[in-house]
Length: 286
Image (cartoon, rainbow, N blue to C red; front, side, top):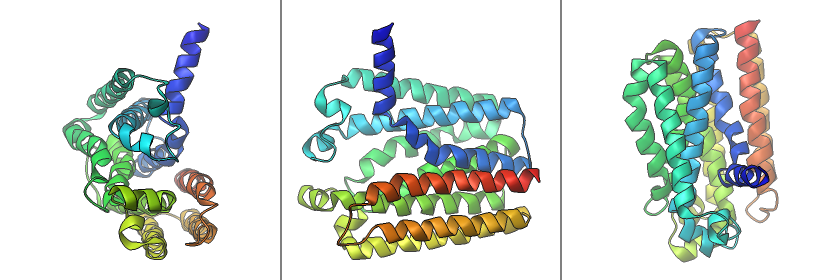
């Protein structure tokens, strides 16, 4: 029993399960906005299964596909696959289980979520390869994870609506912006090894300005989402608070001081995702 428990903990560490806090609140937010309140326990449960499956499958595949790059990078050489703590076959099995959960949830929700499943899997799997040929990899990731918000919406309505695209765009630019900040840590390694990223392509000062522009667009699209949804004042006051957190995030990272990138990456962005969920909860239930 102890061995099973330890193995399970290892798998959770491998897929960085705590990073679900980035996307899952937006999936719930899209769901609540689409329903203008509680959509029911069944929808909630299957959206949760879909998100856990997508996150597990995507991260496991990313670790598997990038294992040689991770082994060469001093920052990531301590990860599970480079250290031999798990076998590639185990990680592949974990990825397949995650994608199986996503597939099951998609078919349980509605016809449109089932039809969009191949598109979702393509973006989830494709992200890990993008850094090999384009600095737009951050925006691919943004579109992929931002689809969580769209997925939560479609799970309720089974249809595309203008507000859905605004929420998706805001979430996508938010992800792309903080992924650019995260990539500043690997600036030198990426340049020396032909890994594509915004920092490697444009340099640190320009990369930070691009990240700032992404988050300015995030703020604008979140406001637009509220307008399209007919949200009340609690939503807009809350989005102002989220905007303040985004501003603070960019005060933590400077071209000549990357020591607080982890703080900007995790703490500030968990505050953004949970803050947006709280804002949407307040607006749809007050």
